[in-house]
Length: 313
Image (cartoon, rainbow, N blue to C red):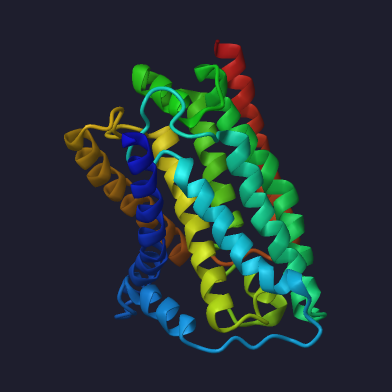
């Protein structure tokens, strides 16, 4: 029963904090650019406003267009329920591991690409094509990055990976660990539509990827899509900070370790979100034909991480 309550708490925590992460990144970027910017909690107001509006659906849209927002949001929420956030007790915290997380997130992306094609919009088709190109290069990198950690832990279970890293803190500074973190960080920027791969603030149709696929959405449908995108960013940041830097995470479900785990998790997410904001103010968006070069480099980093970990065993 205590684990069920902890899982429920973790799921609600992810759903509640996810919009704040994106708002915090935008607020930090505004401050770095010398602007006041919207407050970090502005995404909550945006979601609330969209939920109260009427959804406008194209006459040519099928059930795929209507189902996609629910698929995108639910898959991200399910993944957020079993990735290590505040606690990673020994054993299987919930039925789910590395491969379940990767392919559930891929399922949401697949449906979003189908929705972009469903209405027949030229921009939706363009965004879907670009998104599938990016996904084809990022999904293997995500798997290889965490497989590099799974080789040491002897399991693809997130709890086992965290326990092994906590037991051998020196391994976190090893070459395999650092290469895998660099690869996953690049993939996080690509999968969540951040610079230099995509610009979340753009409205130029010829440069959009994620925004081009959701142009036809409005009202509650758009709210779910945007909330799901925030959850996806939150999940990737959680994987980065808690699989590669799990210090402070609770290894039991006692109240004091959980409180410490919550505080350290918020701090680590804030530091990584700040790093993303600083990076996005220092780099420009890559040309589209240069994006595969960057993602191929991240795949090579992940492959080197696996080889380094395998040879060091």
